[in-house]
Image (tube, rainbow, N blue to C red; front, side, top):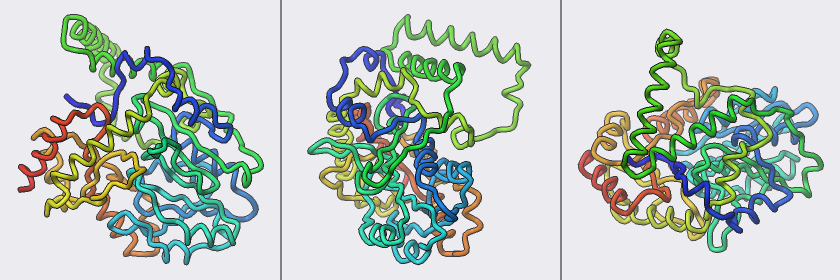
Length: 386
């Protein structure tokens, strides 16, 4: 089965260090690594908040992991409108800017750059910092460089492009930020071991079929079965909870896990970007004009390294499982909005965010997706949607 996101192979652990990865990420004194991207947002908020400003303007369409660090930093959240094409409603955002706003968070969905010239001009006048969230893609290509670098803070999530499982960070404009506060939060030994375990499991699953792979998988299944028996099925009987969106202070830890950093240093960023672009363009050629799956970004900008290929499908939940069953590789983003969105004063803002939440589907284009799999995904869209 093809994975939704890039996952580690054992070869990713043994490659030589990549000069581009070292130069762009590790040799830049303005770049700080964190456990997750939400930790990078948290660090940025701690470093930028001042005075009586206690409210952060955030996009109405989002993942809850963008909102949790705002609230955990002791700040309030206020929403500006995201249009149905994932662009910013500039007028709505700018109309909410005032001395009470501590920061503005911008999401560059799927790695496509939002136009913020007008917004930044007003923010600069009022002294409001912008946290430019590039969590969906940290790379620009031709030439290769980090995204962002146009606001006080640029936020990154490395695992979305690289098979490192975890890892986030942020880059700050040293001319505008005098001090970068640390959280003082560290990862537990248990969490470090879990990260190692997950990467090893992915590597095993990505091995060619054979005695070694099946033997290791069998041993893992025996371990899991024994654990469940010992715990009396407590985990199986517990109420379901979305651990990916659950707010835990450990997620704001200051450092990227060593094994994740090890893989990131060895990732061929130029090759990753080139393959993602090629897969994106191959999908666009086949489905960009499909009437029931509206392509949000039919044209791929020259320097964009895409996270995925987003389409809008009305009543998505009626079709996504059928597309997957037919061979499509896909995932959702924004399916769950933070509950505070319901307190937004604008009905239009809420309704548009909910429409996107129920309609947006992300088709995988990562570097482990083959041309044959791209064809399968395209065919699945056409077969299911007609």
